[in-house]
Length: 118
Length: 106
Image (cartoon, rainbow over all chains, first blue to last red; front, top):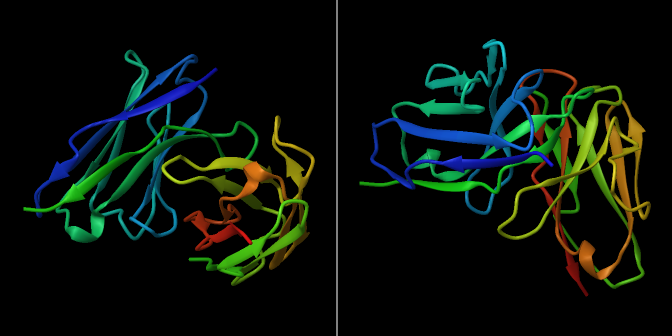
């Protein structure tokens, strides 16, 4: 059974860079697309972007100038960096795997709350 | 971006009721629509994809239909089904979600 686990600081100061890592266990990171999705408190879901195990990426245009997603296949991990954060970036951040035959998300991490505050 | 609008925002119902949630897309998304269930403090779980295909392990009391711009999720409610439901389009980037429909106990 594939499991995903997010890790990283729960508090980030305004204008700094948010950094999170998603560790994948129970399966290989190879041959899948790996995503970041966020959910502001009490709100809906926003897709941030994905990385393929080979390293190709696609980002939501609304965040593209501030987002970098990278992968480390040797560690079965992928990461998110979001620069120049503001309070509007406060959210629960989820990592998720793309289902093999559809652009939907079949495995999710439990999510990690990141608060942007000084 | 394709806007996804769900209705109602909140739905009050009883165990055994058959309820329907609607999701409308701002432009045609063919059948590229998924439904997720989210419980408080938990990650969303995939229920249905390609508008009507049931994800493995999901009970058959959940069903989806629709194409183009209008889609529905129908549930014959059991106690475990009180949660928030989201639709997601994957016809074109960026993938977008509806704002959610909370199903409450009446």
